[in-house]
Image (tube, rainbow, N blue to C red; front, side, top):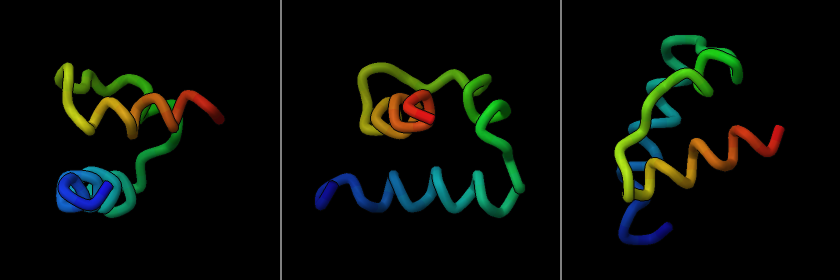
Length: 46
């Protein structure tokens, strides 16, 4: 993550602050290709 940690923190922090569920996060369209896509792919693992 190193160079992309701020993007990860902002995304996940927002999900937590908004109280989003896994199903709600799955509905979000993430730009491609970016590190945000990693978050989306990780969510689909569960």
